[in-house]
Image 1 (cartoon, one colour):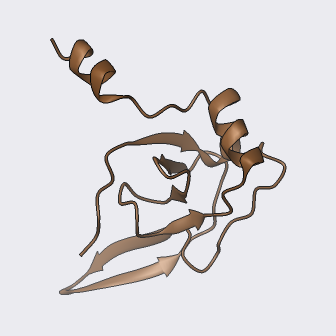
Image 2 (image 1 turned 45 degrees about the horizontal axis):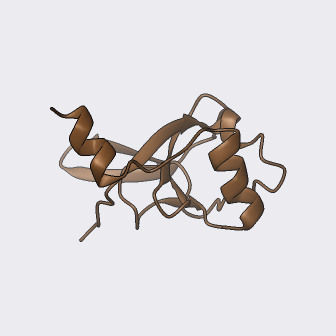
Length: 103
């Protein structure tokens, strides 16, 4: 069963590709799902800079909202974390910040 993380944020592939060390894991990237008759079919599709991917709380990038499925990028390094924090302004909200914005 797929696991939902506590936080992820959507970015376009073009934005993520600005990281100098970006590489796609093609075997799991960007699966196109479609229903044909009574059976489901899956096929890989060409990726474009406008595709939406999800930066997870563990700094992995997935093609869906689940933290453990469709992993596109998992080369987590200090440089990648710095890029996420400084260039993408990615920050996992703390419990206190989440609580204060919901009231």
